[in-house]
Each structure stands twice: as structure tokens, then as C-alpha cells.
Length: 249
Image 1 (tube, rainbow, N blue to C red):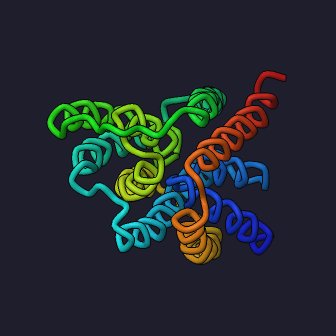
Image 2 (cartoon, helix red, strand yellow):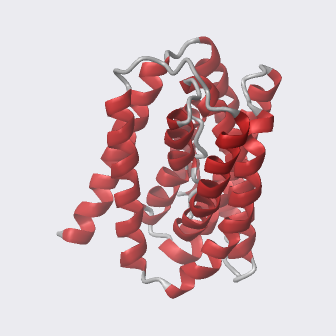
């Protein structure tokens, strides 16, 4: 079964590395569907793989000079603080509530991406000081939510960065860089609680390292901005529907 899971994760990592996401929003449901416990295995493993996918892709994007390193610092610092706090809070929140929050967040982000896919690319980025204040404040809350739900926060970072004026490809590349820090910070919070599954972690880590390098290359050379947004939106809505249907019905 581990080989089958790793193969599924490989495909997902390829897709999400193109979107500037770590992929935990799909890794976690996959682990749950294969019978792993949502809180003790799916969330921490998903967070770790989220960080590995983002790290592998961001190395490519950094070399290609697609990452706004200076602009990412406020978000990295505040989300790094918020993520472990959210991870600790997980044990106080019922599993059903976590899944509902998880699904609601994906619906919001998915609709936002589909709406914006037909709009022109932004041509004006907010001044650095104003942008740093806005993104830094939002980064803490995104980090907390990311740690709580077991995701890296990319599905919130990307729409926020588009809102302050980043072009789509730069937003996706910079999000990958930011997600590395919030993912591993949140993962540490879960490991401290004793949540760890070594065989699953090792096999899927190998899959995401290879797949994310391929996905990053395709995004840089082949993908158009509107395609990225549409794929992003459709994937999020599909997973939200799948998870939410089981909870409601």
C-alpha cells in the first residue's frame, strides 16, 4: 500500500509545485482515505511533505530568480511563529471541526482563484513598507491556520500576494519559499506531541523531491498565469467537496 500512496503523492507534488503550494491540502485527505488517522498521522506527515515539496520547488525558483526574497521575510517570520501555535492547538479541536474548517478554507481560495483567472495580471506592486505591514500581519494568522489544519498556508499566501500586486508566477514562486518555513515549523509542533510515522514519511518524501523539481520546471517554462489560477481553483473546490460531503452527509 505504501508504494501506491507514494505514487499518488508523486502526481500531487508535481501539480502543486507548479502552483506554489506544498500540497498538504491533498496529501492529508489522501492519507485519510487510505486509513491513516487524521490527527496523529495525516496532518503531521502532510505538513512535512508540504515543506519538502515547497523546499525542492523553491530551490529551482530561487535559481531562476523568480522569488521576492526581501518581500517574503515579513511573512516568513510571522508565519513561523504562528504555525507551531496552531499545531499545539490541534489537540484541543475535534477532528470533525478541523475537516469542516479545512474544506471551508479551500472553497474560499478556490472560488477566489477562478474569479481572478480571467483578470489582467497586476502591473503595480504596493510599496515595500505598506506591503510588509499587511503581509506580515496576515502571515501570523495564516501560519496559525496552517499549523492547526496541517497545511503550509500556500492556498492563503498566494491569493494574499496577488491582492497586494504580485504577478501570478512570482506569487507562486515566492509562496513556495515562504511555505517551507511555516510547514517545518508546524511539523515540529506535531513531532513534539509524538506524531510520527517513519515508513510513510520516507517513501513519500522521495516521491515529492523528484516530482516537485519536475513541476517547478514545467511551471517556469510552459504554464500561463491563467492556467495556474484555474487549475488551483478547480483542485481546491474538488477536494473541499469530497471532504465536506462525507461530513455533512
